[in-house]
Image (cartoon, rainbow, N blue to C red; front, side, top):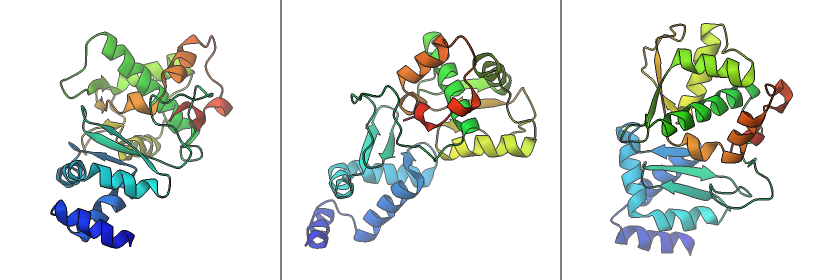
Length: 221
């Protein structure tokens, strides 16, 4: 019955079941869809716009939520039981990505959020909401805010930034040299919905760097 109703709805939108499946699988596999990431995601994002209510209804069957930012043109998947950005919670920090991020990944995400917030206050944000930040500034902020350094080994550093790039939180050139402090990173505006304001406030108000054991996924949503 559901398949028949889905087929009818897709026909009205002039889309095939295969195209619908491709969109759903991409969302579930990557957890995020960013229109300006590449041509494939541009096509899938535009497809999502045509059938957004249908996608929401379909995923709501298994309690999966979608957060759509039309201004910066991205869609994020939230697993069952999680809160969307802006929803009230007894907890100041959302926990739906618990066990998906390691401590050093959370640390870098927190620093990137702090740097984005700083650039926002200074008006250093481009028309698409991105902030361009030198690797050296990120390294210094990491030391000042958390009392730690970026991984010394280039392979580990590259792996760390690649992880955040896969989450679509940053962009950088393929040929970027991660041991070059003059290299630049683009911070995606999605970072704002990824790290809560409460977490950022706690980061800035702490007199001492956050201990290693406290850097878990509670700091991101």
